[in-house]
Amino acid sequence: MDPNEFRRLGHELVDWIATYREHAAEYPVMSPVRPGEVGAQLPAGPPPEGGDLEGIVADLDRIVMPGITHWNHPCFFHYFPSNTDLASVLADIVASGLGAQGMSWQTSPAATEVEDVVMEWLRGMVGLPDTFTGVIEDTASTSTLTALLCARERVSHFCQNRGGLQAEDSPLVVYASDQAHSSVPKGALLAGFGAEHLRLVETDDQHALRLDLLERAVEDDLAAGRRPCAVVAAVGTTATTALDPVAGVADLCERHGIWLHVDAALAGTAMICPEYRWMWRGVERADSVVFNPHKWMGTGFDLSAYYVRDPEHLVRVMSTDPSYLRTAQDGLVRNLRDWGIPLGRRFRALKLWFVLRSEGVEGLQARIRRDVGNAAWLADQVAAAPDWHLMAPAPLQTVCLRHVPAELAGDEEALAAHNAAIVEQVTASGRYYFGTSVLKGRLIVRVSVGAQPTEREHVAGLWAALQAAAGQV
Ligand SMILES: *Cc1c(COP(=O)(O)O)cnc(C)c1O
Image (cartoon, rainbow, N blue to C red; front, side, top):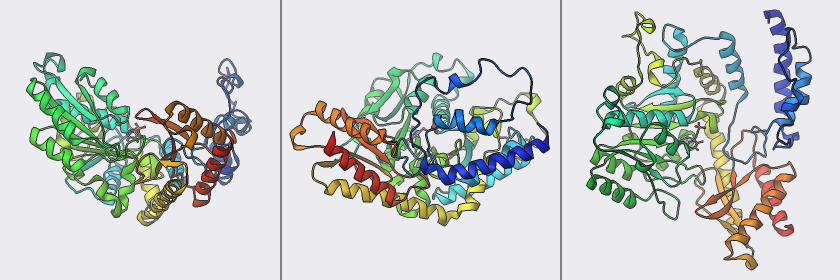
């Protein structure tokens, strides 16, 4: 494509995106297509000749849009927020336009240096002390895998330079709660610990990790000659935003030389507001911390913020340093290829920079407080309504609830069917999108507040729809 055609079509597509955002609320929030419907509209093979972009805007409307679930719709209440502020959209256009590689400082110095600076800003914004150094990874899954690899290498004194875990005399063990995100067991398995050396410790009635059981598991492993290696503590679990007791876990980890990784993928963004920082008290003693600006902060997917206390250790584990990658500046600058798993990296820091400039710290704080306030309002309504139960504390933006009519009380199977039917009825309207989850054997209705355009009226509308459906199903 030549620059003139890019200019023409680019302007048209920027207009198209702006119009989409203005009218996002008019779409059914969950895509109604059936499996195969989108793919069937594409030709069987690629165009043999170029020049085929004529009509692409119409094709986006006709083929792609029906297959989009609208995460930036005001009535999106499923999974977690995945806000993409329009400033972030522009930054991604610029990053692609530059097409720069940020694997080494030399391969585009601005990519490294903008990242250095904005990650420092972000560190201060969430109240992490300056003993942490940050790097952008693609996702929390990658950040957690990286943390587990670093833990493995620290506790095994660099077994990767010998026979790896396969040659260790005694097995290394990883701990998390039974509410940990699936990326934690996945990371532990990929890092070679083995399912037999992964302990998912039971949680308390608030769904937070039980410190007494964690301590017992560590002691049992020590007594059996195994080596406790890493604990992943969650600040804001996926199902209910439960808060593991980070400070207590940090005490235990310090006593035994265990790596402490804090997974605050969603909740980390809330720490921009000082009044929520008690939720991760003790985090300054972690070895590594991850949170995702690509969830609640407005920075479009993908951008995960990974902070470590010992960057030299990270670089020792991750650097390969073949001679063709060396440059004269290596001793003076960061080469971000050595700070994570992939070699190549795109200029993600631009979207963080754009979003921070566009929203400002105070703008982000106001939006987070709005969302927490809306979730608290919903939790209050549920707690006060006859036959409705709050199923977990709601410290942030996720509300877990269910309808328990007197005639079904105590019958878990009937309650699961009844609540699933409520969700089915409300989501079928296309107006709202949210889901169910199973929490310790009970089906719950899960409402995750925090899309950028979501206001109180949308949360109130959902609550009214839930109550109406409960009377009909
Ligand atoms: C969303 C989430 C993750 C996974 O995030 P990705 O960036 O998609 O890998 C991990 N942990 C928690 C607690 C999460 O909420």
